[in-house]
Length: 224
Image (cartoon, rainbow, N blue to C red; front, top):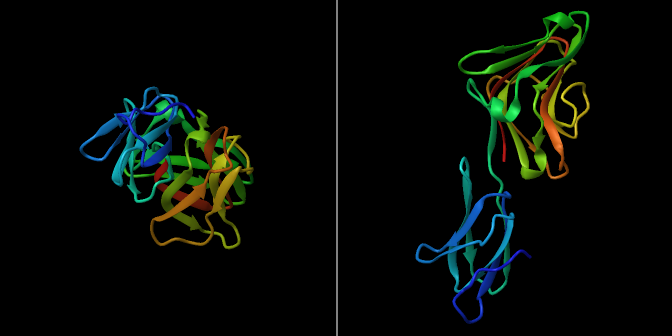
């Protein structure tokens, strides 16, 4: 327990135990009264004086996120707020977070054909015929701050029997993943895939691994 807000005397009706990104400011409000955590440690306990809807908010210079808690009983309510980190979005890159995107490993008959093509709307990852390739960014990210990886895009498997994998890995090359999702089949349009990161609590990379004439067209990649 880091601390508690002052409810102005008397006993609290309930408690909101909140975890939030370290370094952020945290508040709790019911629209009439606003309480603020006394530090930016990433953990605070708000003593709630009455039932009703209370909104907890964490924010720093670049991000803000809120969750509403419906207080109905005299008990402790747990809230976990994690910020959203966008790695790629419709032609926009975020090098301050990811560094450079590149082919991080390739092999096979046409390894030289493995590539990343960027345009104003998406980023296309391609593995050549009879080849394997991994694609990633150069700067690791602290995954302990996030709960889920989201991948929005279209996967084309042009050779039956081969597929791709996307996810999070402590190595930005090769085919090993700490948490991943298969991109099998042929998608006719954009599909969102979500990867649970609850067991990834270290610096790591977003990575795609594909084999034999596969292509993934990424529209958006983000963490929250």
